[in-house]
Length: 188
Image 1 (tube, one colour):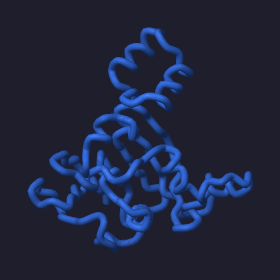
Image 2 (spheres, helix red, strand yellow):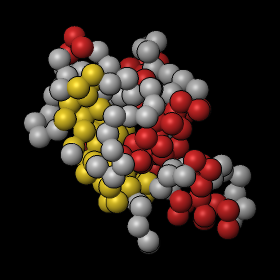
Image 3 (tube, rainbow, N blue to C red):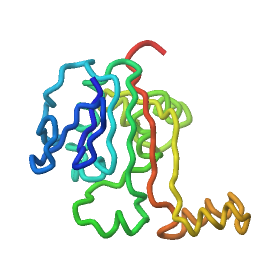
Image 4 (cartoon, rainbow, N blue to C red):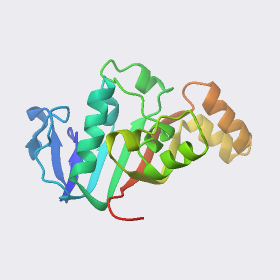
């Protein structure tokens, strides 16, 4: 099974399209903040969330339950693609339905391997993967830059280092970010 969670009007062929709202005519109506989800353990090969995760989990408990449920339904090696607006972009800031900032570093907290490194190094990061019983490795990440910043970089008007500094210091440099995760359920 392949799930397109929070599909809205953006249905994906070959996916089971799921949304909380009947108006967008999903294949199945499910409130992703109600637990447990209706799918069996280890039944999902792929999950797709586009501009959805930032709408879920206004409290840490609910957010962690969303991540737990995602992990529960995923098979070992299942692919999870998450695309969200960048938290310093107006598209995130201006939408009052956005309740959760999602970043690459925040998603790394759901990796047991990363948490074990932090523990070994006595880092102050919370070992959330160990705390809530999940394990997702980040396979790849991608940023979509605002066109003006993409142009500056392509024309070599700024360096990669200058771009990274701008991303840290300014709003509206990055439009959205995408992370591809893999569920790890077997031995490493």
